[in-house]
Length: 110
Image (cartoon, rainbow, N blue to C red):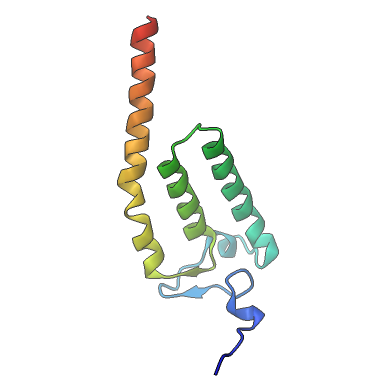
């Protein structure tokens, strides 16, 4: 039998809870519901805009998006942190490439 989940089953509207009993940033600030989601939405849009303008690499942007989701999502599950682990070395490679390209452009122009 198929049961349609109610609106309270989605992380945009449910109360803070999880496996770790750790509150999200919006919960710590006392922002719940839509008011707590607006800062997260703003940071996600900023990460996407930086990636779109190629100011950050795609892996670093992905890490920023995942970190924003982790810190602002009302429910914290262990798999969310596991999803972040592969992004850390990939984001480090993005930073390494960016630093190397700055160094190369400085040595060729100087």
